[in-house]
Length: 396
Image (tube, rainbow, N blue to C red; front, side):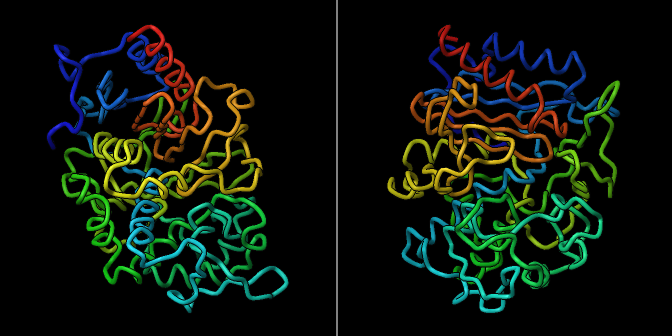
């Protein structure tokens, strides 16, 4: 385990538990909505809650530990997005440059066959016209027919081949005219490789995870004994996720084909948008670096990350939020029915993760669970959010 990145309050041990937060976690465990979780809450740079709860592996009775490693899924997106923005800060990329000069072979067309110009900003903000295979409503949808990988399945493809297949599918809309969650971060990963001149794992390590001391963050997990077993929400209790199991996060969608073993496969292509593994503390290092204006990125670029890039468009099923450069951004707390401040950053990951940063309140929260989809979009997410603000109002 790496040295804790954040000091605890004077006289309070690093395992200090805030009662409302602890209660929300325990309720989810008692009701068997979660199998295990690691939750970190940092307020004004100081840990007010650090807890590992439940089981990392229920069947072998392996307890959850604060240094447990989790498969990230979309929680990798802010990491890879930050790597691209470091290249922007270095003057090697421009947000509004077309990506064709770096990826000339990646030239998807609109539905009517016209060539389309995609920019770096559009990849980061998911306004590039791309989609995800798991969102398709039929098993023989366009991405499925093209053999596109969403980055979470067993795949023998290279990153370049997956991009070729993505480019073969017509864009869902003209780039910049709509918002759609997509494989854009995988394309961004290929762009980072070209600009930095190194494989994506090396590039991300050199640009982000290395400078921030995120020692356990990688595309291939090295310590299998610390990797939390993945579970699927079920009745009467979650069941272990099996290799190749398809689970849909949304009614009507074909769903995600999962390969829990992919994170151990060095031959699997590095998926910028759905790969990587990390600890909760590693991820908190990134969030706090961004919140506190660390040397990683200049303040202006961090502000741009947190600015809604959608032109006021609504995100499906996420009322009150827009999208910045790598994560969603709170536009209207009233519409979202949330105690979070306007401008709060938030996103999650399909293996069961949620996180948010309320810059106005000096607050960063990471909740990595091993239970999909409860830990990403279930009751636990809102219960924990509300418990955090209750704890702040009560002075912990």
